[in-house]
Length: 476
Ligand code: 4AD
Ligand code: MG
Image (cartoon, rainbow, N blue to C red; front, top):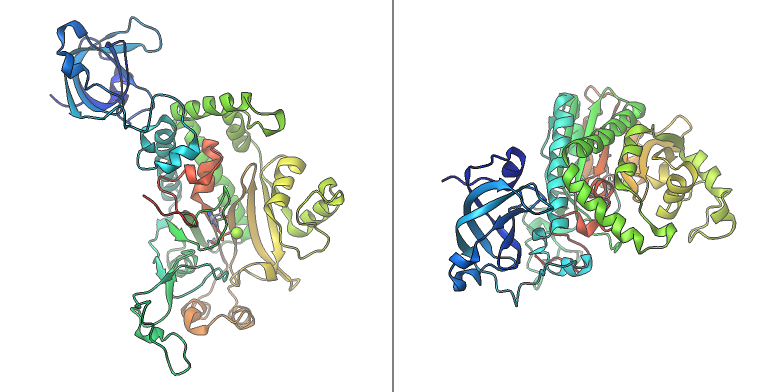
C-alpha cells in the first residue's frame, strides 16, 4: 500500500478508505489516541487504537518522538478538535524514541532552549511552520521574477572583491596557518595561496549580477552571502540569504517600484498559501502578548501583513528624514543613543524604526543618501554629494532592502574607485563594462531572513533559518 501524507488525508477526507500513514508521534494519550505529524502540514492526524487487542510491549514503544507507521480506516471523528481520525488496524514502530531522553516533551519550550537543540527543533510546530513558510517564500520569489521575465543567475561564492567595501568578509584560504608563506616585504604571500590571490566568501553577488544584466537586461540572484561583522543582534546573521535583482535601462524609481511590488507579492503569497502555519504562529504571538505590557505587544500578525499589502510605502529623501529626526522628540530629549545633529550622519536602527513605527507608521523608502556613507558603485546625483540609493525600512525590522541605481559613467566610477582606494586589479572587469555599451541600471538586495522575520512575526533572526551562523556559533 502506498503512503498517504497527512495533508492529503485531511484535505480529501476519503472516509471509509484504508490508509497508510507514516510520521512521528507527537503525543499518545490514554493508551488510545496517537497524534501523528509527518511535516506535510501543521495539523496532526489522530489515530485511535484499540489497546485491548494490542500487545502491551508494543504499545509501550509508542512514545513522543518515535517514528510510526499506521494502517487504518478513516472515519468521522467522535471527539472534538479534528473532523476525521484513523481507526488503527495495524501499526509498526519504525524508529524508537526513548521518552526519558527525548528533549522535546509535549509542552511549550522556550525559543532559546530550542536553539540549543537545533538538530531537533524542526520537529516542533513552530519551526516546522517557519520552514514551510520559508519554502513558500523561496518559491514565491522565483515565481515573481520568472513571471516578469527575469533570469536567475548563479554568482560565485568565492570572490577576490570586497564589493560593499565594509571589510567584513570571511577569508578563504588553504594556506597552512602554522606556516604562513611571506613575501620579500614580510607580508603574506598570497601568490602561493590556492587561487594565487587573496580571496573571501562573497558579501553580495551584485557586481556579477550587473555584468549579466548588461546582457540579459533583467536578472536576479538568490543565494547565500557571508558577513564577518561582529553584530550580535536579533537582525544579523553571519550567513544569510539574499535576493538581488538587477535591471538594465532602469533608474532608481523603477527600482523602488520593483522592490515594493515584490515585497507586496511575497506577503500576499504567504497570506494566500500559508494560512494554517501563519494562524499557528499568530496564535502563539497573541498568547505571548497577553503576558506583555501593552507597548511591547506585537499585535495581530495578519493585520500587520495586510497593512503592508494595502498601503503605499512612503518615499522620502535622506535629507528630509534628517530634518524629521533632528526635530523629533526622542532626539531633542536625548532619548536616542546616537543624537542626530548634522546632515551626513549615518542612520542607526533606532532612527529607522522611529521613522517607520512612530512617525509614518508605514514602510518607508529612504533615498538619496550622502555618497560617503554608501558603497562606491552607487550613482552620484547632480548635486555631487548624494547618491541614488534607496533603503526600505519595515516596522519591527528596520532595513529590509538596500539598493541603488548604479554609476554607469566610466570616468565618475573610475574616480570613485580611486578615491576609495579600491585595488584596480579586483574591480577592473566591473569598470570595463562601462566602456562597452554602458546603460543606466539599478538593483537591490532583499535580506531573505529579514523578510522571513516580518512574515512569520518571529522576534529573532536565528529562528527563521534552519541552522543559524552567528558570532561564536556554528553548531549543527
Ligand atoms: O544593504 P546591503 O548591504 O546591500 C547589498 O549587499 C547590495 N549589494 C544589494 C544590492 O544592491 N544588490 O544588504 C542588503 C540586505 C539588507 O537590506 C538586509 O536586509 C540584508 O541584506 N542584510 C542582512 N541580513 C541578515 N544578516 C546580516 N548580517 C545582513 N546584512 C545585510
Ligand atoms: Mg544596506
